[in-house]
Image 1 (cartoon, protein in one colour):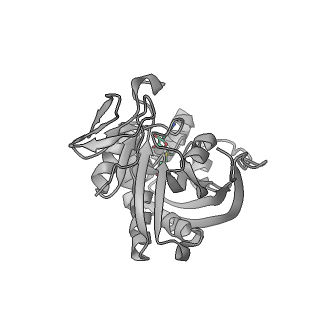
Image 2 (spheres, protein in one colour; image 1 turned 90 degrees about the vertical axis):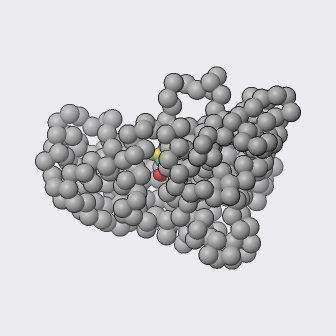
Length: 282
Ligand SMILES: C[S@@+](CC[C@H](N)C(=O)[O-])C[C@H]1O[C@@H](n2cnc3c(N)ncnc32)[C@H](O)[C@@H]1O
């Protein structure tokens, strides 16, 4: 069962206690659990728009695409690169910007098979993503919240995952234990190249992120994973397109060109970077 333990009030940072189906802080702030068990800890004053994060349609497309398991090699690559799994018997994981929960769910199952006890929290700013995640896996604490202000006490986690997401390093550092690790998974140079070649007239040069490092983190390992998969039919192709930023960036003509294709072989090219928190830095 999700513990919903060790969370902080998003209004005054006080500890939250689970009482019945609500999380309460000693100063009277109360957050009710939704029917599916998630909790919304994103106060209106922290929202930049009425419906922040991925839309209902994007979440549905991502879930449909991920459930076809084309991206399972990414789960395997994360597990293969996991730092010292054999030395830990318990791990507290935050998936920051977890989407509809595919990775956190699969990773937890795999780690448990290695007799590692996992306490998992999945957080996303999109209520649609968390609603969907809370139906996928009942063993995870699912929270609507923002990476910009994580509703958790200092040093709450051993590992923070940020997969194709929006990292906020100061917050990640604060929320990580001093011996904690951060995983960034991002697109590599040839990621979805076949899709991009149809959508755009010109492919921009690849620019690695954080070339000068990250202030509060030290790079521990960097690996790449390249694989390909087949998409059959417009429904599969449109699901992939709709879960990427290209759905907003591409021109009308580019999207029209995609609509004429029935089968595609797609390259996935991703980078996995594990960072260690620099101790003494929040
Ligand atoms: C590209 S999706 C990746 C989702 C998931 N990590 C995956 O790989 O399937 C980015 C996610 O970040 C979420 N997001 C955007 N801004 C955020 C923020 N400030 N805090 C938390 N999540 C955020 C979006 O709602 C979306 O679900």
